[in-house]
Image 1 (cartoon, rainbow, N blue to C red):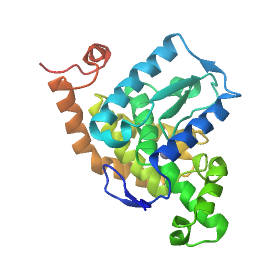
Image 2: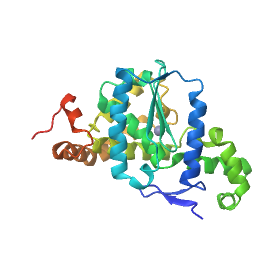
Image 3: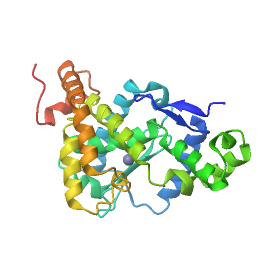
Image 4: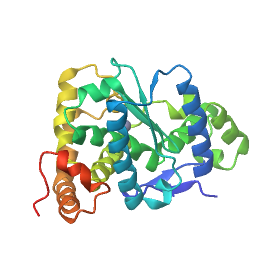
Amino acid sequence: MTACTTVPGTGRKQFNVYSTSQENAMGAQAYQDEMKNAKVISSGPVFDRVQIVGARIATAAKQRHPEIANTMVWKWTVIDDPKMINAWMLPGGYGAVYTGLVNFVQSDDELAVVMGHEAAHAIARHGGERMTQGAAAQLGATAAGVATDSEAIAQGAAMGLQAGILLPYSRKQESEADELGLFIAAQAGYDPRSAITLWRRMQSQGGAKIEFLSTHPSEGTRIELLQEQMPQAYAMYKRTRVDGTATDAKDFANTKTPASK
Ligand SMILES: [Zn+2]
């Protein structure tokens, strides 16, 4: 029984009755469903930009959380929808970035913070955790009961999209994705301080549709938590840049603060 798992990076114990391969298969299916009505962009400057940032995020995630990140496909689909300031990543690494988000961000650093946050949801297996909670709620079962009831698991899988994968995340999961995502972006060589400017701008925007504002912790709390983590994240970012250990050093030539040596 592997129902109790540990979130890599934060060490939080979570209750999840799904295996990584079950989750990833559900992510693949949900991704296919989402793609049916999506207007996908597969070439051009916006596509290229998302792929470059996405590849660096993927490499940093594999460095930091190899066990889970190496099971993921790391696909970043670009969807043409200028009104959607949004991005997501399903279990298994099936990600999407909307053109509305690319237009909204003011730098690759901000884009990387969002993509790192979305990747963190998949790395921390928040989808499986939500599906477990959804199945428990649906059946009125205790969590322990669900773990031993294969029928409940199957039912949870069948209603996976509604019960788990596309439901808003909990506050705790959002804060966890903020934290993991911040360090992934920093290790990928993106300035983590951009998280603060991004969140503030989104807050002032009001009705942004981005996934991580749907069940937001209060913005003040979110920014406070990020600021607590910032010295460590910023130190990692500087180390990555100066050491040249980032995944794609040639891209640094285009960023604002070149490495000092
Ligand atoms: Zn989120």
